[in-house]
Image (tube, rainbow, N blue to C red; front, top):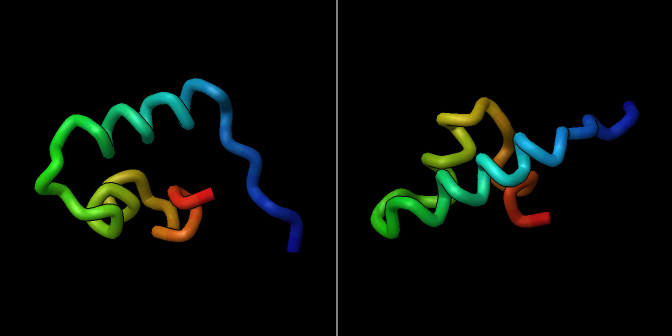
Length: 42
C-alpha cells in the first residue's frame, strides 16, 4: 500500500497543534487529526 502524502499546510498545522498544549499527548493529537501516532513522529 502506498504511503499517504500530507500537504505542507497539514504538517504545519499538526506540529502547531501538538506544540500548542504540552499536556496533550502525541496519541491524543494523532487521534484528533485522524492519523496514526507514528505518523506524527516522522
